[in-house]
Image (cartoon, rainbow, N blue to C red; front, top):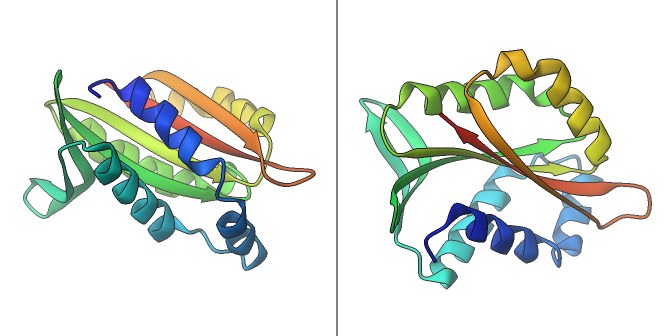
Length: 159
């Protein structure tokens, strides 16, 4: 597998059957980034993708994942977003800026947002688009795990 789109699709598929975990995280208001990180590590390993964790890319600056795919190196930051996009702006911004300052390879911000609607995410993104001018493309997938809310997985390609 050598395409981030394929990897994104596998990530989305993987999280659709995690309702028991996600329900507990929501119930106790846990952001769960550590859990998201472990699940991504487990999934990449299962897929046989060559990767490194917590890779130093500048002195004392690290990226969550470095993947070695057929089209080059891919650097990925992860964010788990709880409740609303607005309350997560600072964390998204710091991950975004870490990726922007790195000048080589393909750069991605992979976010898991729960539990709220895809419409609230799209509204927030359109209102803050100027805040993230280096976002080249966005992939979004949402799925219902609760009666009244959805989980959303977002992938940004950073130039």
